[in-house]
Amino acid sequence: MISDNETWLIDVSDTIIGRHAAGTEGSISRLDRLIYCLWVADYSMRNAGDLATAYDLCKSFHEEGSQLSQDLGLTVTHSALSLSRADLEQLYFQRFEAICDELRAAKAR
Image 1 (cartoon, rainbow, N blue to C red):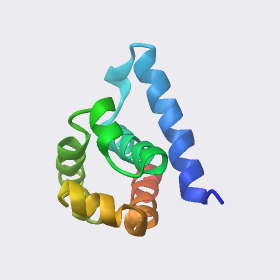
Image 2 (cartoon, rainbow, N blue to C red):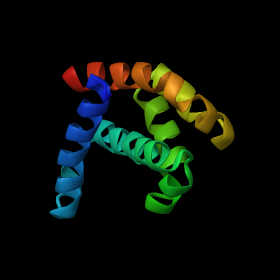
Image 3 (cartoon, rainbow, N blue to C red):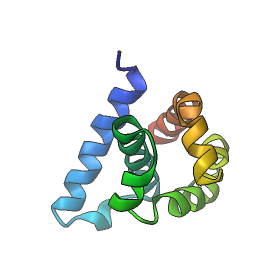
Image 4 (cartoon, helix red, strand yellow):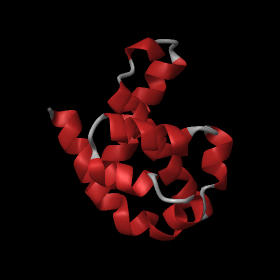
Protein backbone atom coordinates (compact mmCIF):
# COMPACT_ATOMS: atom_id res chain seq x y z
CA MET A 1 0.00 0.00 0.00
CA ILE A 2 1.36 3.40 -0.99
CA SER A 3 1.41 5.99 1.78
CA ASP A 4 0.31 9.60 1.38
CA ASN A 5 3.96 10.64 1.69
CA GLU A 6 5.03 8.27 -1.09
CA THR A 7 2.39 9.77 -3.37
CA TRP A 8 3.43 13.29 -2.39
CA LEU A 9 7.11 12.57 -3.08
CA ILE A 10 6.33 11.10 -6.50
CA ASP A 11 4.06 14.00 -7.46
CA VAL A 12 6.34 16.82 -6.29
CA SER A 13 9.41 15.13 -7.77
CA ASP A 14 7.67 14.73 -11.11
CA THR A 15 7.24 18.51 -11.24
CA ILE A 16 10.87 19.11 -10.25
CA ILE A 17 12.17 16.57 -12.79
CA GLY A 18 9.96 18.14 -15.46
CA ARG A 19 11.45 21.58 -14.82
CA HIS A 20 14.93 20.11 -14.99
CA ALA A 21 14.18 18.29 -18.25
CA ALA A 22 12.76 21.49 -19.73
CA GLY A 23 16.03 23.25 -19.02
CA THR A 24 14.56 25.47 -16.33
CA GLU A 25 16.59 24.01 -13.47
CA GLY A 26 17.50 27.58 -12.48
CA SER A 27 13.96 27.82 -11.15
CA ILE A 28 14.54 24.86 -8.84
CA SER A 29 14.92 25.99 -5.23
CA ARG A 30 17.35 24.47 -2.78
CA LEU A 31 14.38 22.78 -1.08
CA ASP A 32 13.27 21.32 -4.40
CA ARG A 33 16.80 20.05 -5.02
CA LEU A 34 16.72 18.40 -1.58
CA ILE A 35 13.39 16.79 -2.40
CA TYR A 36 14.91 15.49 -5.62
CA CYS A 37 17.80 13.99 -3.63
CA LEU A 38 15.26 12.18 -1.44
CA TRP A 39 13.35 10.97 -4.49
CA VAL A 40 16.57 9.51 -5.92
CA ALA A 41 17.16 7.64 -2.66
CA ASP A 42 13.53 6.54 -2.46
CA TYR A 43 13.46 5.28 -6.05
CA SER A 44 16.59 3.25 -5.43
CA MET A 45 15.49 1.84 -2.08
CA ARG A 46 12.02 0.83 -3.28
CA ASN A 47 13.19 -0.68 -6.56
CA ALA A 48 16.57 -2.18 -5.69
CA GLY A 49 16.54 -2.37 -1.90
CA ASP A 50 19.76 -0.38 -1.62
CA LEU A 51 21.25 2.94 -2.70
CA ALA A 52 23.37 1.70 -5.61
CA THR A 53 20.92 2.98 -8.23
CA ALA A 54 20.70 6.31 -6.42
CA TYR A 55 24.44 6.82 -6.79
CA ASP A 56 24.12 5.91 -10.48
CA LEU A 57 21.31 8.44 -11.01
CA CYS A 58 22.88 11.26 -9.03
CA LYS A 59 26.34 10.59 -7.65
CA SER A 60 26.13 13.54 -5.23
CA PHE A 61 22.60 12.93 -3.88
CA HIS A 62 23.76 11.77 -0.43
CA GLU A 63 26.34 14.48 0.24
CA GLU A 64 24.25 17.18 -1.42
CA GLY A 65 21.12 16.15 0.47
CA SER A 66 22.98 16.22 3.76
CA GLN A 67 24.40 19.68 3.05
CA LEU A 68 21.12 21.13 1.78
CA SER A 69 19.15 19.80 4.74
CA GLN A 70 21.70 21.28 7.13
CA ASP A 71 21.64 24.64 5.31
CA LEU A 72 17.84 24.67 5.40
CA GLY A 73 17.70 23.74 9.09
CA LEU A 74 15.77 20.52 8.45
CA THR A 75 17.08 18.48 11.35
CA VAL A 76 15.13 15.27 10.78
CA THR A 77 16.20 15.08 7.15
CA HIS A 78 19.76 16.08 7.97
CA SER A 79 19.98 13.41 10.67
CA ALA A 80 19.00 10.74 8.14
CA LEU A 81 21.11 11.97 5.24
CA SER A 82 24.14 12.34 7.49
CA LEU A 83 24.14 8.61 8.14
CA SER A 84 26.64 6.38 6.40
CA ARG A 85 25.41 4.67 3.26
CA ALA A 86 25.00 1.35 5.10
CA ASP A 87 23.10 2.93 7.98
CA LEU A 88 20.86 4.95 5.66
CA GLU A 89 20.02 1.79 3.71
CA GLN A 90 19.20 -0.01 6.95
CA LEU A 91 17.10 2.80 8.48
CA TYR A 92 15.62 4.41 5.37
CA PHE A 93 12.08 3.06 5.63
CA GLN A 94 11.94 3.71 9.39
CA ARG A 95 12.77 7.39 8.79
CA PHE A 96 10.92 7.98 5.53
CA GLU A 97 7.62 9.27 6.94
CA ALA A 98 9.29 11.75 9.32
CA ILE A 99 11.57 13.04 6.55
CA CYS A 100 8.62 13.58 4.21
CA ASP A 101 6.59 15.25 6.96
CA GLU A 102 9.44 17.70 7.54
CA LEU A 103 9.92 18.38 3.82
CA ARG A 104 6.19 18.83 3.25
CA ALA A 105 5.98 21.32 6.11
CA ALA A 106 8.96 23.24 4.72
CA LYS A 107 7.40 23.24 1.23
CA ALA A 108 4.11 24.57 2.63
CA ARG A 109 5.82 27.62 4.17
